[in-house]
Image (cartoon, rainbow, N blue to C red; front, top):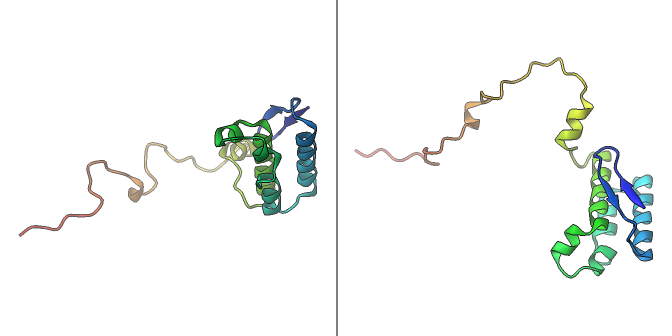
Length: 129
C-alpha cells in the first residue's frame, strides 16, 4: 500500500502498517474525501489516542513515522482546500504557467525599510552635547 499526493509528489510506502494503523489510515482518507473541517481532522489525526502516538516513545519516533507524515500531508491538503492554509510556494509557482507582470529585480530591495544593516544599532543613540 502506498500513499501518493499528486500535487506535491509525496510518496510513502505504508505496506508495513499493522491492521489497526491501516484502518486508521483508511479513515483518514475517508475524512479527506468527505472534506471534514480542518480542525476536526486535526483532532482525529493528532490526538493522543491516535495510533501514531500510542506506538512511539519519543518525539523523533513520531516525526519519522510514515503514518504521521501521511496524516500531516492530508491535514495540510485539507487546510489548503478549505482556505485555511496557504499553499507552498512550489505549488503556487507551478500553478502559474505564464506571467505577463513585470518581474522585480532581485538585487534591489522593494522598500528601503526592508534593508538590514549589520552595523546599524537597533535604536538611535542620543546625541551628546
